[in-house]
Amino acid sequence: MSFNTNHKQVIIAGGGPSGAATALSLISRGINCLIAEAEPCPKFKAGETIPPLSLPLLQRLKISHLLNDKAHLHCYGNKLIWGDSEPYEKSFLLNTHSHGWHIDRTYFEQQLKLHTIDAGAEWLAGYRLTQCKPGNNGWDITLTNTEGQQQYFSCDFIADASGRASRIARSMGIQRNKLDNLTGITMCFHISGGNNPFYTFIESSPHGWWYAAPLSDSRIITTYFTDTDIVDPGMMQTGHHLEAIKNTKMIKGLLDATIINNTAPATYTASTSWLSRRHDKSWLAVGDAAIAYDPISSYGIISALESGYYAGHAIADTLKGSKDALIAYDWLLNKAFATYKEMYIHQYSLEKRWIEEEFWKRRR
Ligand SMILES: Cc1cc2nc3c(=O)[nH]c(=O)nc-3n(C[C@H](O)[C@H](O)[C@H](O)COP(=O)(O)OP(=O)(O)OC[C@H]3O[C@@H](n4cnc5c(N)ncnc54)[C@H](O)[C@@H]3O)c2cc1C
Image (cartoon, rainbow, N blue to C red):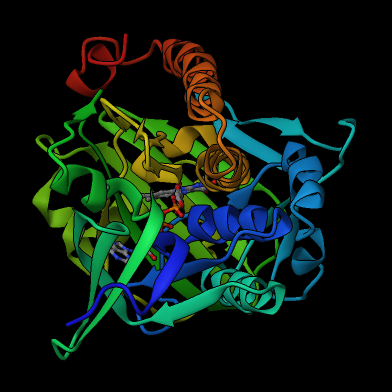
């Protein structure tokens, strides 16, 4: 086994939005990089709403054109039942950017992957970063595929873009903290008939809240968010879950159509969580691996892209000798996290109807 023959300047573990954005930023600075992505091809991930204020960042990353595709729908605002039993609307039409998007997430990740490869990144699909050790030539890296085959590299710098699990940083002994135990139970419906409402729908309930969004190809995605320790186990059964949707005030209207087929309920961790240390001299964490946000913020994808943009520049500066680029990067992450925490407290404090219920009490 030789780590030295295959030397890269940067190896990025994870080919989600944060890994792709990190690579794009690095390439724009003339730094070669390899993305190792555990999955052989993009698979379904929860998270499809991109808010309008994301446009300038998408333009800066030169990827805004990827959303001009019929796979992605425009979204013109939010319809909410939150803090009041009557629905109200927050339209984007008067904003600087008049619409956001409901993306086809799997397709978007495939677009990002092809775009990143076109830009000049190497992409090793189906390989998980399983080991990184300090070596003679920076880091010695082992990548392993599902058949157990291994490839060996060395690199100067590692970016942990492995998502909430932050596997690389945690393998170095860095602790992950969390603010809550939020979990999301998602179903996707393929419908016939019904109106195609170009809105995001959010509805609070005694033990959590509902989210729903229309997707291309006559699909509706719904997610029920609650805490892992108070979740009704029946919500994992299709029939029970559908009954719960029927008991909502607003979300149920979206399924007022013929359901052609639907996925089974699937659970995703959605807590606010963060690494206690997000960089050292020759590694950093980016996207959810660094800080993961509550989906009520709609900030996950854009934060992954934004932190990737800055991570790439911070790594490039560091490789060119800067001593403070990573400190500046961490400062930006902390600043965004502080703003988010204010928003989080404010948003949950608006709902006062169930303040005695555990889910809401915990968020006050
Ligand atoms: C239920 C739910 C709903 C959400 N809704 C929204 C929403 O509406 N809008 C929004 O903006 N955000 C939303 N989010 C958040 C959003 O999906 C994430 O913030 C976003 O995916 C973060 O991107 P990332 O690149 O950091 O991580 P990920 O997208 O998680 O990518 C990490 C990648 O790393 C790979 N990987 C893992 N380990 C390794 C390894 N050892 N080696 C190599 N590869 C590895 C994984 O296969 C994965 O592809 C939601 C999240 C949840 C859970």
